Length: 286
Image (cartoon, rainbow, N blue to C red; front, side, top):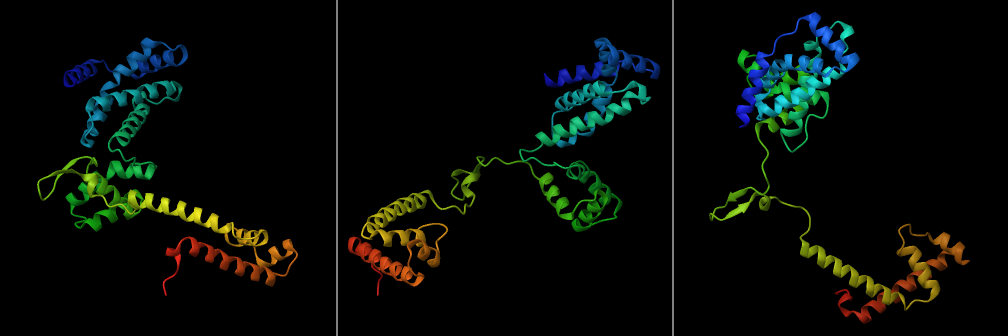
């Protein structure tokens, strides 16, 4: 059904009459000034063969010709909306840019699930790499892959690394991570199962969380054995992100920084003793 609809569209476009310059100008003025829908229809119909011709140039990117033609028609309508008949430029010359831009944007959006060609240089590389590589290999100017990359990079003014990356992308299509694969024992599995992750296993994450909560509870119980000054010094010195200095704590408490150090040392020893008494497994091995 798609092929028959496309064939009808192509036949209708080929039968559409060409517009002479004066007639084209008159129709463009009617559309520009009076929004004459009939004038718009005649202009766009007469230039649909241009859309079809350009769509054929992009058919090697693996997308539907019908979709390319539809996108080109969108570009054609955009050109008609922006065209200024008083600039004395043929509509076909002006519309060509919009048709090509619309098709190229469609290809970049649909050729791969990975978005590519976001800059003008990357777009030029995407659409010209194959053509330039074929030309270099055909003329014999470059034989090795490195030579081709270097020549293409010079021609398009992009880094050689970008050329190599784009070439690798064009060489392969998207693959689903859930695509079935056959293993050595002929059991079906999915591609995603062969990906290596640096993240810890779920069991390890849960275990670390439980252990962390348990150690926090033990620490809070042990802190209850300290008096108010010891607890204040230990919390501000050891249990806060900033970590107060001995001097600042001495000024706050009205004592010397050496005295703060002594209280801190005593509090740490009391804390260690309380933890070991309640949980002997924390006792360091000799």
